[in-house]
Each structure stands twice: as structure tokens, then as C-alpha cells.
Length: 257
Image (cartoon, rainbow, N blue to C red):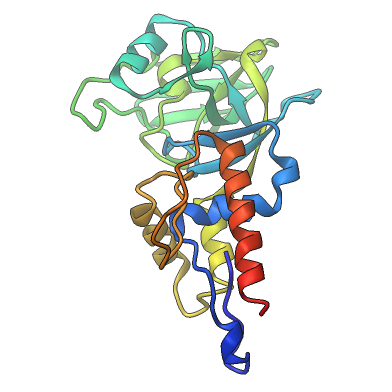
């Protein structure tokens, strides 16, 4: 992303290259291409859409950590995949890893009721089990009751989107399924915050909405305003980073004349 400088900039230097919304995160990431390894593109609404980095070296999972986890191979998960909640991916069973926050760890007491889920007596926000999905199909939550989290498991609950498919429906997840800690690299909210440097008079919520609409919810989409031949669509985060880096270097060269 290239921000135009103030009006005192000479006219010949105002030939800014605008890289449009869906590309913004990937373009920023191009500057950080050295960190391209271990990237994951999240396209679901359970957590902010965009590019996450997975840190595979970890000793202990704490409550509140965001993790990348392979969903357990259970009938509930199989049904979720058939309904389209979980995209195809490289996890066992051919499913994509999930990006979810850890709500309960070893020794915690989880209480499931119709009003939501308590962890050690505290109600987790935005986690009332839903009766139907967005398509009107019935959802089956785990049975009401009290569950003590075992030493080899965690519960995953996302307050980012109340329609998240999480432990409300599939219960505890084995620690062995966790791939690593997930850190946001460039996600919708981070991208909007970065774009404020170029659009100081636009509300962050407006920028987020523009990004989602213009990118068609595709964090790998690259677009250069005014360019007849647009960049090809990247197949993964690494390729997006390489393309964005090349575009960023070209933009810098074009504005330095």
C-alpha cells in the first residue's frame, strides 16, 4: 500500500500506486516476505479473515491463546464439513485447520446451559448455543451439564462471531490436534487500521466494510487501480506475499522519479 504524501510533494511524485482493499493485507505482507513460512489464510468468520502466522514451537497452551487446530475426526465434524462449515484442507479427514481461541484448559470447570457456556463460573460472551444455522438447518449442541477439562484437552470458544462452529457443538478437542499458536499477520481489522494512515477522515468500521465488499472476502485478491493487466490471483499466502512485494517495489520505483 502506497500512501500519498502531503500536497507539498512535487507533482511528479504523486503518481501513487493504489493497491485495492483485498490486496492491502497481502501487499503489506509482501514487505514482510521473510516471515512467509507457516502462514495460514483464514476465510471463515469465526476469527478475523486474513493471513495468520502459526508458531509451532510452544510448551503450554494458556486460556485466551488463539490456536490453529485440526478438528477431531468425529461424526459431528463430518456433518459440519458436509454442511460447509469447515473447508477442505490438509488435516486428517481432509479438513482445513480451525483458528479458534482457547476458552478452557486442564482442570477448568465448563458448565453448558441454554444461556451459554460458563468457564469456572464466568459466562463466556457470545456463546449461547444456537438452534439453527444460517441456512435454517437444526444444530445439535453438546448436552447441558458440567464438564471437567482433562489434562489432554481444551475447549475452543469464539466470541468474534456468535455463529462460530466451536466447542458448543463438538466439545473438547485433544491437545494433540493443536498445530500451534496463531498470530494475526494481516487480517481485516489490522488492514483497516493500517489504511487509516492514508484515509484519516474515514471511520475504521467503514474501512472494514469496504475491505470486505471490495475483496469479495478473498484475502489473496490483488488489484492495482488504473492497471490494464491485473496481477494473477495467488494460490496461497506465500505467492501472495511474493506478488505483493514485487508490486510494492514497483510502486516505490514509480514514485521516486
